[in-house]
Length: 146
Image (cartoon, rainbow, N blue to C red; front, side, top):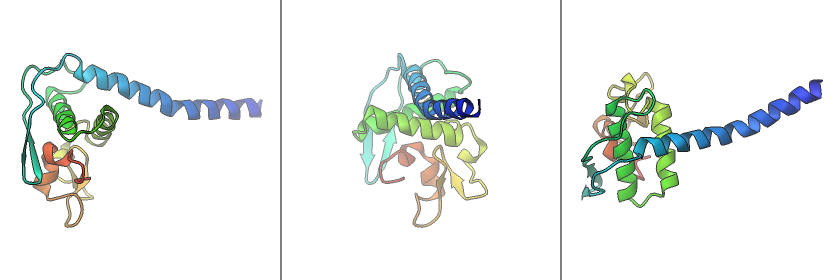
C-alpha cells in the first residue's frame, strides 16, 4: 500500500508541471484570441515604447482590463524583439505569477525587498533598472532588462 501511494505521488508530481504548462498555454491563447492592433513598436535608444491599439480581448478569468493591457504590451515587446511565442508565453506566465499582470499593489510601489513592476524586478543600482524603468512594462519586458 505504501509503495502504491509513493508511486502515485511521484506520478502526480511528475505530471503536474506538464498540466501547469498546458493550462498556461490555454490561458495564453485565450488572452490573445481575437486581439487586433498593430505590431509596431518605436525604439528610442535602449528603451522601447509600445502602443496597444484596437479592441482588447475580453478579460480572461478574473484578470482586469488593465492586466490584459499589460499582457498585450509584453507580447508586443516580445514580437518587436523577435522573441519566440514560447518565450512570450514564459514572460506572460512570469508576470502572472509575480504581479497578477500588474494587479498586485507592489507593481507600482516597491515591496519590502525593493521589487516592483509586473515582473517584480529589483530596482537597485546594478540590478534591473530604476524604479521608473521597472514600472514601465515596455522597458521591463525587454531582453537584457532581466
